[in-house]
Image (cartoon, rainbow, N blue to C red; front, side, top):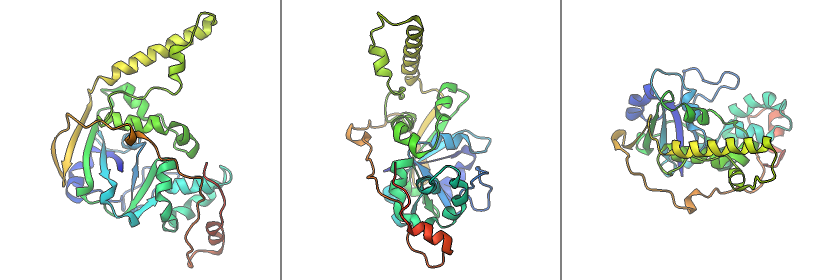
Length: 285
């Protein structure tokens, strides 16, 4: 499985030497719910969104990591996945977020469900430079339409259930793995709809959708502002002009069974948090 990490070009020289490191003492980019400072956060869906939200003077960049070269025991679910799975109501998120983040090791066994249902996970400790296989450098000023698409997502279990194909396809296009940008869901119906008896408002709306469809097809052919390079053991080897296309089978998403999020028992936990963790509180959507 390919995992991705979004960051800024300013950090690339250090990454090529030391690999991907947790943020450590650096301030988190997310003020309301700070990330764990001992984790490297990974995604299959939102790396360019995270890259554009990373502070720096350079271009946003996304690194591709081969998950088979990581220690599976150090892979953890994103705390947002656990929180959203266990929170009975949105207002409960704030109450349980810090506790779950601080005790994320108790949920380590759910890292694959985290990817399959939210698109994110995290890795405790350093990711060796040998596991980093490609880098994509993106100039959002040169491609404002693509930047708008990148900044679109709402990161939630429900949204990912319906939109995962669009987000993962956008990542694949950025890396040159597929030829065309993802279109909006349901657009095929609009393109083939009979408008002979439609009202003027609907006709105008369909024409706008068709125009956007054609623009996105044309945008797909333009690689301006996007550079993909191969990496071997911390060295950028060459610009990746030709990338093998994905087979149909490799594009299929494995849907996780509707299991339940249960924490491993931890004797040092407080009485309240222990009760919550060991209970089965919510089915996955």
